[in-house]
Length: 132
Image (cartoon, rainbow, N blue to C red; front, top):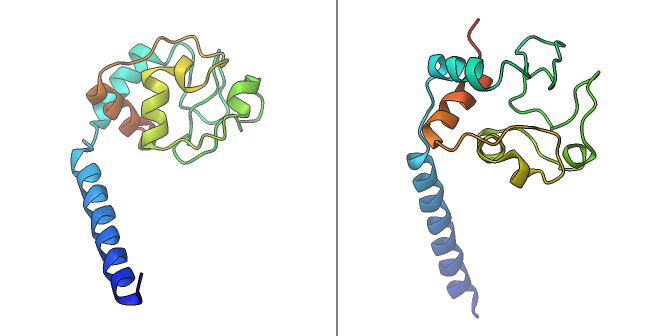
């Protein structure tokens, strides 16, 4: 392949990647923080706290967004979650909240999952920006 064709090919690849990224961003729906707070109270608060250092049956979820999974002091995580290499962002949280057992096989989370994408978006918005 000559260099001119390679440059054109790379340009087309860059355009395709940009288009795919724009499509993914356009399809992502921002969540409603207040709805997320209500979902947290209903689905999560029995086992988790949003207060720093306050573990319950599950670890505190304070400042979870952007953190590596299974790194909180004072909580006994499963080997599966410790070895998962997950970093909590919108995508990984959505997968995990939808089906924890499928996302981290062998994990200890006893939750069947939140199937509705819009509710997951709301809950993730709350985890990213909790209201007090």
